[in-house]
Amino acid sequence: LDAFDGQLPDVELKHEPQDLQHGNGQMGKLSDETYEKVHNLQVTINELREELETLRPTVHGLRDELETLRIIADEREEEIGRLRPIADEREEEIGRLRPIADEREEEIGRLRPIADEREEELLENEDNYDLDAFDGQLPDVELKHEPQDLQHGN
Figure (cartoon, rainbow, N blue to C red):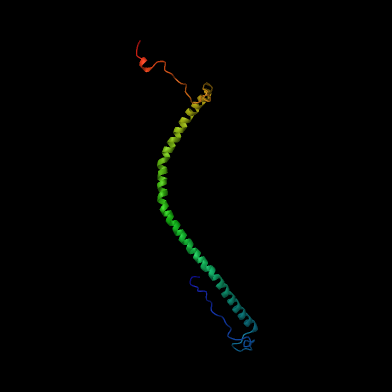
């Protein structure tokens, strides 16, 4: 299609129907059936030419769309090229942090039973502490003696 410019050769009958008679053995004479076939071919060629002209904008539109998609694909490849080092760096970072995370998980695994035990102890002793009654105020404390009266000894 790139090389084809869309131009079909014009097809015209060289003889008018009255000149194309069923031959009586003479050269250049066509039978009615042959003339009809030639005429039908001319009509078909003209219809194909019209159809080609209607398809030409579609072909050009598809070419433009293909070019746009190629540009987008090139941009995506460039973006992937820029992001690949960042992704590799992140993977390295994950590789460095994975052992630390595993260690923390092990630590949590060791501490979980202790925390559960402490929580259970608190729940068992909860009745001993009336934290709801505690309003946050500490009782006033008064000194019975002035500081100068407080001496070591007697």
